[in-house]
Image 1 (cartoon, rainbow, N blue to C red):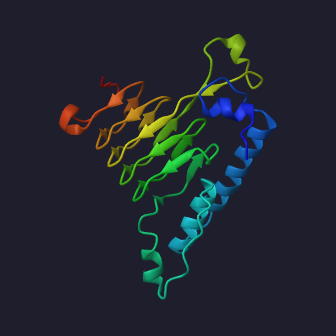
Image 2 (cartoon, rainbow, N blue to C red):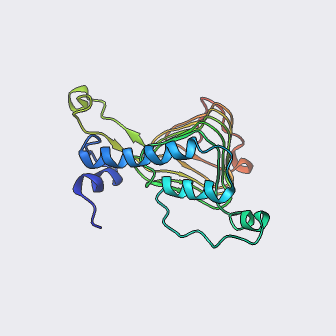
Image 3 (tube, rainbow, N blue to C red):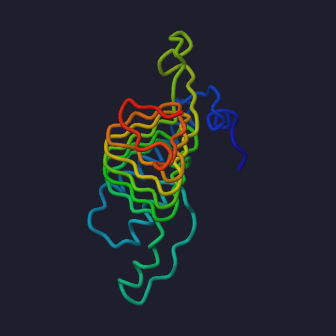
Length: 205
């Protein structure tokens, strides 16, 4: 299905209209999926994976049930482990690798593509913001004006501490550690062996 011009602009990081009916409908779809996921309670791993895939619009069919509960759960060993509650704007712009763990209260504003590499571990209260607004208030114009975004990419084998905020356009390098409370701005985070941990108010060039 071809992208609308408004959606193409959003994904490309150009000015677009977030309150266009198409965008409102996409966010509503995601929020319905999130309500199901966040309220499901104690269910088998298969059901959690199914509900997560619904949020991110992963349409791969689930494998046939295993002979035992243990065998069935083992089939999803590579699927992300995501703890509720979680909030995501669209869902369709979030790509999560194998073996990722996301702890509670994660917020992802996925105006543009947000990727999380394999085996990355995320502590509670991570916020990823790929969306932003014009600084000119006349152009910004509240809900009537346009907004924009920049992709956010977190590499493989990253450890993200609690209460971290990652801003639009950031790429976190493979194997990096983001210390608790860090606000990660327009920087390339390097591996710990090269730059050490990134702590709050610290930037790495």
